[in-house]
Length: 498
Image 1: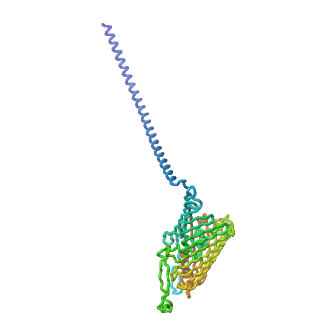
Image 2: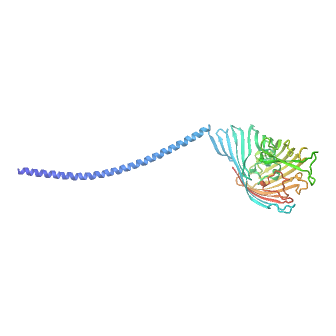
Image 3: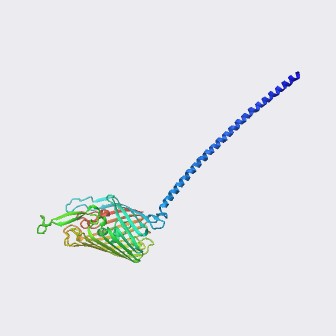
């Protein structure tokens, strides 16, 4: 019995000891498990973070891929609009767009000239003794601002050239040139539209490539300017011949309703004799009609202009300007032209005929350039016209320059005009006009970027009677008071071409 109690006590102790051991081991294991769970949770959080970053990077990649696909699709769409693609850029002269096969071409070009002018002239009107105007005038202007589009369509044979110009006086934009044409052969071009009549070479050379800041007064008085019509140009190695059937001198420069042709007619009595005023002079009535670009608004029945040039030496590229560039061949070109027009039938003021003629020559060699031109005009009035009798005017212009290293170019120009037949009888106006121009040019990039400076001195008085139709303000000049002379103009100009 005693042994059984002893055995039970011993077993109970062993069980309690084992339970305590198991309890201690369980507590230790729980702590370890909690530590392991915490470590695993940290790893899970880290993995979740990495997965989130990877998901964001993948989303960005998908967005970039979608954008690239859109750009490529847009490029394919644009390319599909041009069967064989296109080319674009700058060819050294103009910006351009062209088809890959060369059958379509669009050149974009432009010109900007910014000018400063100082003008001085005597302001006393000798007939009244009173000041007539401010004797010193100065200011800035945008002399020329133009943009044009040229090229060909379907093939290089079908060409076009359209140019817009902004008026210096009021900033109105107008069509200056519009030509469409066909190159029938390598040396023959046919064209129609609005362009300069082939007459004075100084006028035919672009305003962007002149030697002086502005063309000569001789040119401005005799020029036929822009007109409408049809023309042809034939060129060989030695000869160039141009012809144009047109609407008359400056018909393309008419301003519509604000431009008028003044008709003058003597007032007659019932017997057909002139009615006289108190001073015994015939009374003249005046009326005006609009002159515009419509077919029935020009001032002529028809006109024809033709010009021929002979290249004695050099190449035809030297015809395009007055400068003698380094490396350019020695050249000598001689030319002449005739312009003939018949005045509008039924217009008592415009009736009559005009014959203009010119001869010129240019020579270039090693930086030295010379140009000489003579021009004349013969006005033949009909017997029915108010201004009956013939009128003749003449002009000569000569200029010389020397170009140093394609950069600095001093020059001189002299002009002479005989306008005696235009002077009203007894008016205090000069029969002959003499002008001298001295100046220099600085070329940053030839004609594309250049600075020009010159001084013009008019020895004789300039008047509206002896210079009809001339835009003196555009030249930096102005009309003198009656009996005055000795006008001087200082002109500075910067030009950019694109």
